[in-house]
Length: 133
Image 1 (spheres, rainbow, N blue to C red):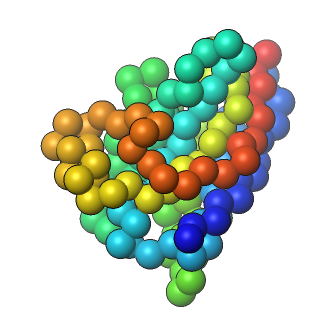
Image 2 (image 1 turned 180 degrees about the vertical axis):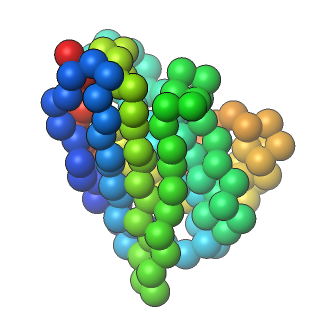
């Protein structure tokens, strides 16, 4: 069972930067992926960035490509995934969730298509709020 704890959410001004962190305990590369999603009030949850932790491949939504960077740091019993966000815009406002573990069939499809969604991941954190004004 993977446990996820996010941190780093804050209020920033337009054009600013922020770094989110997600500590995934009980995570191994057999879980395949860790991803960031966000959800604005009244909006559907959308995938922002995903990393295939075994091979290091990264994927981004079109809305954040070139502005956000996902990275990982592996430890013996956990994996810390960061989301570096720059050139922030009010449209980036939302509750940011860390999610982990893509079943192998889902991961194969993601690697081939570069697209993913909430149904592709199994475990979720509680979220951290990002507000851009």
